[in-house]
Image (cartoon, rainbow, N blue to C red; front, side, top):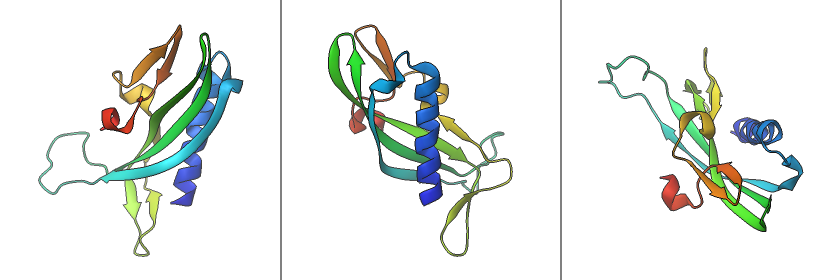
Amino acid sequence: MNELISDGENEIRDHINDYWSKPDNLTSITYEGNYVLSLKEDNTRWGLYDNFVYMVYKIQAINPDPVQAVEYYDYVRYSNLVLSAKGEWSLGFGGDSTTSDILDEDGSFNVGNYRYSGYQDLKSFF
């Protein structure tokens, strides 16, 4: 699980470095927890055959204009997870990770002229 936590944080950092105009304004990324969605036996819809885990992170930053602290929640989703006999999660064949901005168009908000991909609180996240 520690590897997934670290990989998820790196995914979010990479996204921030690629898309923020001022990535140095990132203050912190803190792992908050996860939830797992597993394949149901009666699932017959194409494309829904994976197990998923959503790794949830709190992101803190300084918004450049207006200058103010911003705190929000984001996630990284891992697909095709396999649970080992030891109770450890790992990516199975064809597994991948995706950040919320790709999956969730409604999961964003603006502060001034800056858009943040994520949720302002955990209540709106779920």
